[in-house]
View 1 (cartoon, rainbow, N blue to C red):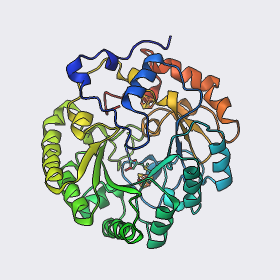
View 2: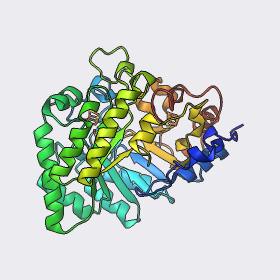
View 3: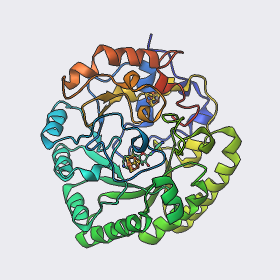
View 4: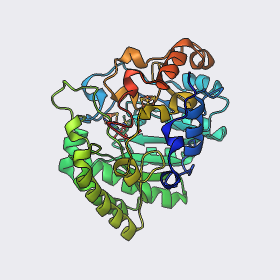
Length: 373
Ligand SMILES: C[S@@+](CC[C@H](N)C(=O)[O-])C[C@H]1O[C@@H](n2cnc3c(N)ncnc32)[C@H](O)[C@@H]1O
Ligand code: SF4
Ligand code: SF4
């Protein structure tokens, strides 16, 4: 059955004190997530959604499946399709306007955001910011976008090129610096701007430099996110490999030293430095006590929908980066069938049932073990 209490709920008080319940990004609180996973029952309708508004990219990141093997035919979500999906999500509180692909390639993005803001939904997305021209900056600010997360992955042009695959470091930094000025000119406190680093051995030494960079251009937040790997183990040029992981025990001490230094600089500059999912970078990467069957603590398939540009339902944003066969993570099609039909359908039910078992779906078996959950 789906109801076994995840270990996270059974932790001693000293550990549970670390659990953060902030909902600063419109997402579910950790308390809510833990409760949901313990119950193992889906919400009547998703409260969060990922919309892959474009499934192609103008970048060539060495960590991204899109660079090596796109899973679906090229497509963008149209405004009409998008509205049809949103209309079927009555409880939506938070929308992430990306899947795998670059959201700024979709020219209807600002209209989509406006539509969500009329419904009071918190809206956020990650971008490579290569197309963040002055015109797009103004459009996004005026759309009411709550949060814009710029993936930077390094503090030097050399590392940026190695990780992101294109020589665009200076352009991206200039675009973000201009975005800060445009916001000031327009007197807008939104979107909240942040720089994002997908942590790997290749770029972790530059984490303190990313904090300095943020301070220099006026960005108030930096995030360190987990690197997921496995989807292209046989591709030579990928950086999404086990030996680039900063999460395994053999690298913990070094990871800790870079994170400590980044924390010191963040304090000195007044920059907020965070990890994924409302945890601190230290909690997310270093201070993770070993857990049995950690995937059982995941509540994503119970509360969030992920829709690709082709309409495919995926269980979460991590699954497409893993080595799980694509068919094993596709749970229906939201554009072909209704949201309710997919959400309550057999494929989703079976996926959830396996998630809360000792034999999880292929995508889930390394969650909390090879990377933080
Ligand atoms: C797939 S991208 C889509 C949005 C946009 N194109 C961008 O790069 O920000 C979403 C996020 O995934 C990150 N990412 C890329 N490869 C990853 C990996 N192997 N594991 C975890 N995150 C990864 C990117 O750096 C980015 O912050
Ligand atoms: S991580 Fe983002 S920018 Fe990089 S290739 Fe993938 S979709 Fe494009
Ligand atoms: S892959 Fe990880 S995040 Fe996604 S549903 Fe499975 S356990 Fe949850």
